[in-house]
Amino acid sequence: MRASDAISMPHTAQRAEPAIHGTPPWSERAAEVLLAACGLVTVLTTLGILSVLAVESFGFLRQVGLFALLFDTQWTPLFSDKHFGIWPLLAGTLLTSLIAIVVALPLGLLSAIFMSELADARWRKLLKPALELLAGVPTIVYGYFALVVVTPALQAIIPGLSGFNALGAGIVMGIMVTPMIASLAEDALYAVPRNLREAAYALGAGQVPTIARVVVPAALGGIAASVILALSRAVGETMIVAIAAGQEPHLTLDPRVPIETMTAYIVQVSMGDTPAGTLEYRTIFVVGSALFLMTLCMNVLSYRLARRFQGNR
Amino acid sequence: MTAPGQRSRTPERVFYALALLAVVLPLLTLAGLLYGVLQNGAERLSWDFLTSYPSRKPLLAGILPGLVGSFLLMVLTALIALPLGVGAAIHLEEYGKRSRWSRFIELNIANLAGVPSIVYGLLGLGLFVRTLHLGRSLLAGACTLSLLVLPMVVMVSREALRTVPHHLREASYALGATRWATVRQIVLPMAYPGILTGAILALSRAIGETAPLVVVGALTYITFVPDGLDAPFTALPIQIFNWVSRPQRGFVINAAAAIVVLLLTMLVLNGAAIYLRNRLQRKSS
Image 1 (cartoon, chains in turn green, red):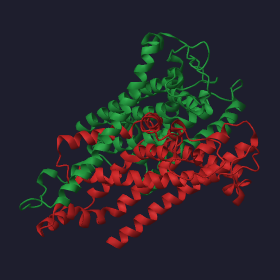
Image 2: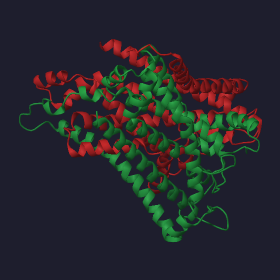
Image 3: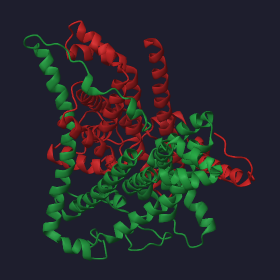
Image 4: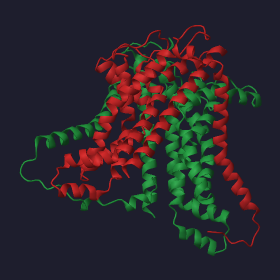
């Protein structure tokens, strides 16, 4: 939905209500209660996520402590010499996500400019669903691409690139989140008032300077929102990195070596047979909590930015 | 709107070409990758591949348990998530009255839509598998997927309900109909094509999901078809994950063939959604 659609929505305050004479039939009450219960399920889902993550994480923190989690530089819960420093996993997640954004930002933003400013309606009608197709491909398929196609291709160019690495996974993840940036940034560009462009043209600016110095700056809030949302998606993305980035938590920003992301660690433990209640079992909930908090902050920030930007129009 | 044409057009042409390239490049990449997967997988695609159980020998292995598992998961997810999602959407759109509680639910759903799918897997593991003692079963997997697609079902259903013109509701009220009768007999039938289309798209997303099922405990090597809600299960994406992770070339080819099956299934579902929408829309207008 475009942002401008919101304006034409009917105002609910003026809606008519059914006239009720006497007590409504029991079916009316039952329907209302049942429908409210459906709404309640969504709230219970959030509560469920929070409590499952909190309970197991507290169990972990009581055994290991926050200090070890934050001030150790190794993550080896599955070895006999156990270390619980979350930084190697965080580094892996940030590295792959940043590579994804480096790929997706130019592609997504230029696509958005193309669809909003340069292309005529016919092109846009064709390209928008085509880009959405990219977002609809299951991530397991992208994981296959990263491991079987992209990494061998990169190995031909970059000597010393490991079979599992952050680079291939990050690039493929970038292609995956490109449509997200393209779509949201296009909404933001499209919402820039037309008279700003016309004023720039009236001052003698050409189309490219107008886009670069007037339209894009005016849409910067929405563009930033789209990038943060894409980053959040990349941080939470699991299968691509689980397949192609490796299972070796290293505190490194070298994109050529195997690493392990937070999500890939959760998959690694889940694939093994870890009994409930053990420390190893609890570690995946701790990592999950960190993941949940990170993505939540980014989603809220993105939402706020997008909203503030819309309010300024 | 045309820019003034006094100066050279070259920078604009270059920029246009660059922007066009940015749109086309990801699409071409995807097309190339899909072609590669089809080429790799084609040699393994056969009736035997669809109807065999996994095997230690790649040439004998098939995807039957994964196919059946994915199909059952999809049916169960539809049975759980659709009533809940459509119900919540009706609650918000038709009964909400812009109350504080409705706003809270709306915000909550927007947040849930952004939660990574693997976190839903942890929810499923902690809630359905452990606390409710469903075990690593088909039902636990379906419940987890249902909660995962619920925000999407609610959002598309609300969109569909919003397209029903308000004067139809008012006409119904004027005839003395109650709110529920209006919803059931006027609003829902009109919103039906939109809801159905959205629901199929949500389910098509659900069958591509891998991470939450891995965490909930789908098995990777299974030589039977699930025979009940409490049976262990696998799914097509899980089978692909298992094969991709193996070093032997034969299994990678199997993975490519299974990917072709998965993508074809999704294509059929999406095609069905578009077909149904067009057909039902024409009928109702």
